[in-house]
Image (cartoon, rainbow, N blue to C red; front, top):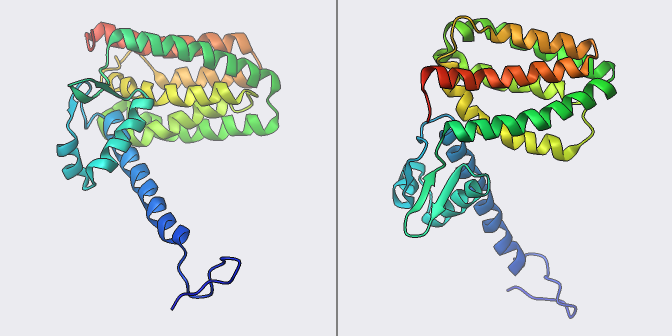
Length: 245
């Protein structure tokens, strides 16, 4: 039989109320996080189409979780603006549009250009080494990706992100890097779209090479200008092929 000391401390062998409740809560948080990550990946990678309705009943069967867990995960995605909700209409994947892409691109250019300037001015030898090593990894995957983007995009994307993160890794502003991390996820939806339609005249590898060289040369303004051209090139692809309205 469980007993307590006069001070109320549980004796050995007694299962306290806090222990009994903490474990299920921890498991629930973990399940919500896993569901959130799976949904997030399916939205960003296009398995859940932009603008599509997200019915809780259908989703809980698809992901094999409870309705409560699914609603919590969807609420986290609403906070990231990857999912939207309206009264009487439920949840749906945030639509994609040319206007939204332009807005994201302009915001990213403003923040990442500032981060680049700070990094170019403040970066040390370790910063340079991160740029060189991340560019080398990118070079290895970039050529096959340009030949067959549908096959290689999922391997190229995190390496591409790693290169851009290395470029700004000497930026002292935690908030700029945090906001850029959010923007990068949203931009990935559009990068997936444009990667399949890049014209032969566009050489993304050469764009990255120019970014690397200008950063290592400590030419902050040229680096920022090249970054803006690099990001805006994707918008040109969308307009040229009429991929979005």
